[in-house]
Length: 141
Picture 1 (cartoon, rainbow, N blue to C red):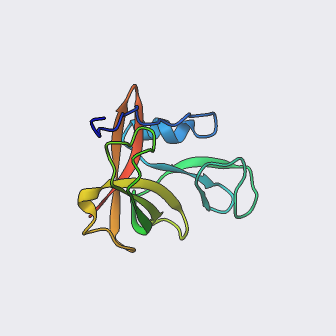
Picture 2: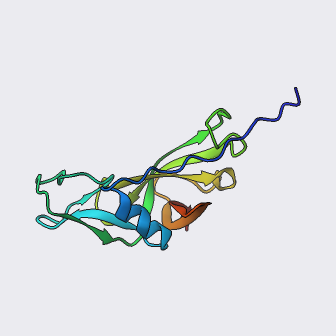
């Protein structure tokens, strides 16, 4: 055994009818979040009804892409399919600026370990995974 870990391709999202506008916008370098037309509440991940008022009139709206680290953990496991050679890396939960508890999950390279902290300001960036798949990620600013 050489000690080298076999690598698989990173997973990609399976866009469905509900989430397709989110992934289409990401491919264009834009971050959009589903928003209720009745009360203005943002829902993420997308749903069929508003989490706040249960209305069904929802549309995707652009957001600033800015926020703060809500939580994070350093991932050392090398058995997560597609991320075997990235470990260790940092999983983060970002609270977007538009609304309290509007959360998105992303990851950071381990080189950010000294800078990551709860409340650290972040902005969206986009990771091209090939084959037309683009993933919103965040970087510390």
